[in-house]
Length: 359
Image 1 (cartoon, one colour):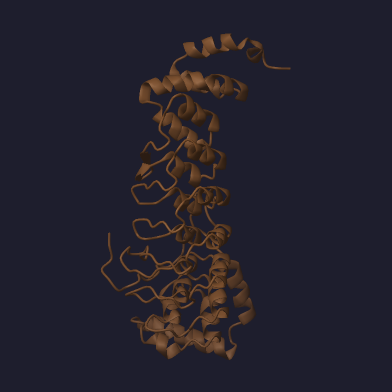
Image 2 (image 1 turned 180 degrees about the horizontal axis):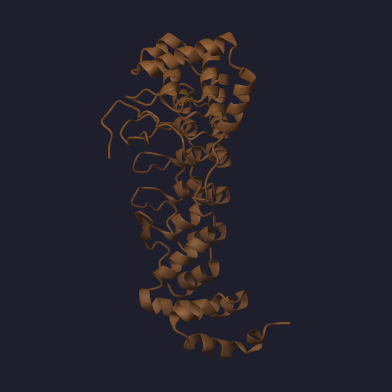
């Protein structure tokens, strides 16, 4: 049986809602879905009178509310390309927000209303960048089918494939590659935003996404690609961060373990000192003397020498170390915002040197 309020004629309910202050009316609408559907149009007409409807359209984009969006787009004429601040980034459109949050029906509605499929925000990112970053595969498909530029570049020349690779969205990576994204596209190193040569494979290695690394390698990514100036390879990035599964993947793909000048073993020592990673590099033929050449602290050099001797002699239980590596170094978990969390006790990873670091 319906609650008493819902048995009242719709006209009376609308009169009740209209008599309430705006903030109380918002609470009234949240009482029941049927009330919301009935009264939201009147509520948002009031919002339209106050701010031109733009805040309501932003709300619709964040929540995926196609009912509200349709009201403002189709009946009240609010522009689908209205620009606003989203967090720290300005010039964001509703399509950016809906794309990142995976609201595929709202994305379709905005596009049908004439939203620019390749609208750029302040950081020069497009809705496809946002869909890739958020792992919104179905949204990415809709955007590409609507003519989105699959090789759009943001302010540091990153493509949507870079965004998906860094966040570990291997299904989105597979789709973008199938749709024509260049696996060897290069952007600026996000660590300093100056060095060029940072590929999607560097991104997967930096953030510990083995499935993405496998996908990119299968598509022809160069396993030993180097970032300009710093000359780090994907193996060096993964070794420095202690991502054992990515290190294993890259070594199986033929990564050069003694590549110079940035030797992965030295980067692993200067970085997280993950013993599973160190052991894998040693088993793959890492040259300890070559790694020692770049170490500036005597105690660190001594520690590496002692570890290498114990590992090679079998004094360390390799099986146990590999189990530990698998437990700690698998593809990084992500937090509620989709970001890779930093272990609390993690040591700082060396900056990629080559040019002055930007603020």
